[in-house]
Length: 226
Image (tube, rainbow, N blue to C red; front, top):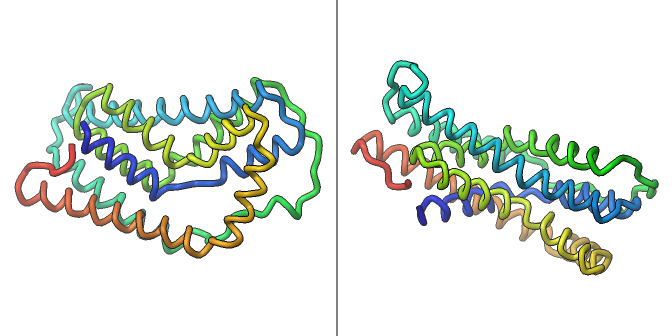
């Protein structure tokens, strides 16, 4: 399981996404309260883990014939890994290198209930479903056919990929969010090129790892990962 969690952490780093933190920072600036902030964060975490685990589990059952489907060879997961690796490379080519700058946007008072913020968190999770690194995590978690391992894998993935979001929530809890937001903006402006390059390097390494794992299975009928 250790290899699976390390791979999930690497994929999370490759899929590092500051958008959740950017959206929450805008909401906080517009007057979002503590219950609303927490409901958004909890919904993002729980729904991401839930969706990923369900997809990995259903996929494993289907591919193993557990849902009365014809048995499909384990090589299906290998081809999914190759597809995920290709999507990661394509995503790197397409992905914008800019993060919206909220400093130039006028602040508005925000409305909406705690439930609405939770629903927004669930809606934000939908963006993960089309993230190639999330799909790759489904592929490697599905290989094990282990519910606990899948839950932990997606918990690691969402924790790493949304690290800025969790940092902002913790800072908000301690009343230090304004300093954190200001420091993050300064760091982004000063180190933007290096940060983007680092994320891209991790993504390339993740794609290479998935490709090696898939090719190894297709040639030896055994996975390196999982």
